[in-house]
Amino acid sequence: MKLISATLPLAGTLAMFVTLVGCTQESNPGGPGASAVNKTKETSRTDSKGNTTEEVVTTNKPVVTDKANTFTLHAPMMATTLDTGKKRDVDLSIRRGSDFKQSVKLEFKAPAGVTVTPAMATIPAGQDKITVTLEASKDAAAGKGRVEVTAVPESGQSVSLEIPVEVRQST
Image 1 (cartoon, rainbow, N blue to C red):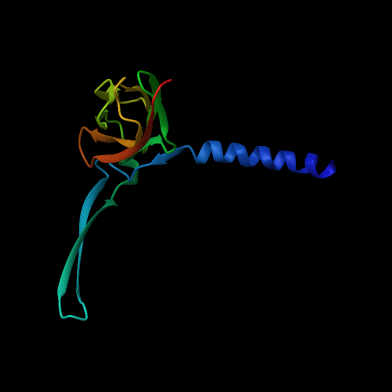
Image 2 (cartoon, rainbow, N blue to C red):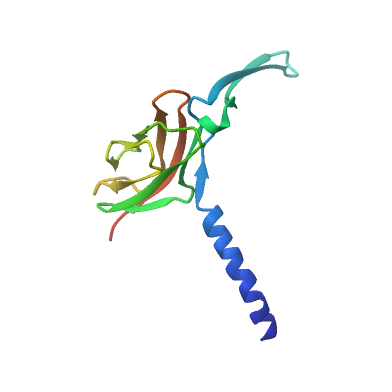
């Protein structure tokens, strides 16, 4: 009994940590203080039969030149479960650098059978959060998918995240 009561505060602290840290994902920095740098890597391989294959990989990694004038987009990391014919609200937010005062337009690309309302949203300057509604149509196919969210500032680098969604057939 002593062991249980001694570990209970630790378990509560761990649960709170997971709740605060493990529930959202964060984008790369965007805005005027960040810029995209495309990095290309080329490789070629020759197999035992003398066939050569070439691979070109391009990555788009931001370079932060003024952290105070950037923002990051935050969205749920865990899958949002949608029963067909039902709606669910999802909170999206941005974390602003101290000099980032712009509004940010949010654009959405949802899988077939899933709609986002509003179809385009804006987080006004001076605010950090918005709630959108995801809805699975009655004939949406069951399965896992992703809603792509692109955050477009008034100027500077845009950023994107994907919100995992799972559609279940209603009973």
